[in-house]
Length: 378
Image (cartoon, rainbow, N blue to C red; front, side, top):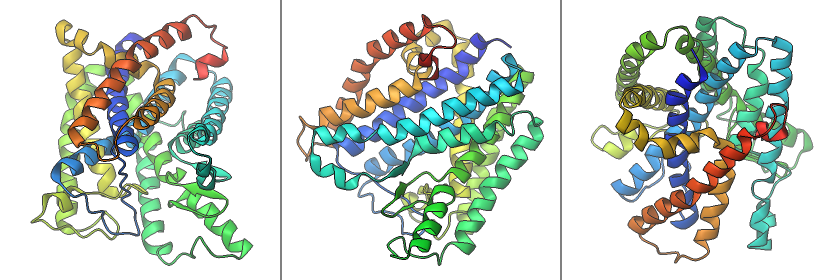
């Protein structure tokens, strides 16, 4: 199975995730609201169905990135079957992602020097978890696909158990004892979000590593038999969706979030920080169903042409990540704090229109570089 076949599914799905992520960051930068569904807090008050859906649909972004990274690593290993060189490549790129995470918020100082108060010694956000997961995935990349799926699921479950039954009574991050600072720092970097004077972490690596390892297994199944894979993936998506509904009715798998079956928002709301079992089930269900839908679309030439902007965004994910992040911050400096949700959506679309030619030019630039160029890492 060639890379062109992969691009029609994986890159377009990645593009869908990118534009949804852009909408989420536009929402927080321009609409000035950011929700945190945390494992040790109550579900936020979203205010309205429209705001809730705006937030809820963005939930597929982080698991989508981690899963698609695992799938891409499986492809990379197939076409570069030298285990040592693969490990070196993943180690280098993983370190670059972790390093870039630390630089992401520095430009905010140009807008307000007071922002330096919110900058920590180390930031553990999405690029951190993806970078470290990429490095750790190198140790699982040769495993058979069934083992990868089982280990990935087990890691997610173990993290849920640790957070639920061991860390509920963990020490406060504000404790002044140095040993407690160290203890909490390790806990935040690995298992549950949190911050102290050293670190600020909202994407601990362990659960997202589990998602990435599942992606390794999914990639192996996809490479073996594409037609068989897409014949089954939408069915698996429906099964996961049913499991999510059952777990919410049973009030299990979403930390301390008790479902209210009379309220749609409360029922659908899920804990993202760290990802609960319910969160993983429903987001994977949506991702699998989207993957199957995109596969159908790519067989229709007219519809496939309409998806080209998504394909462009999906081919340059890291560049898009930084470009859109700064673009919406800049746009926010020219908007009123009381902007309507409708106008926020319009500005989101304006941002995507601006980003398309920029990303397309960068993709062309990247193609002209040698295989060992630093630009191939970005």
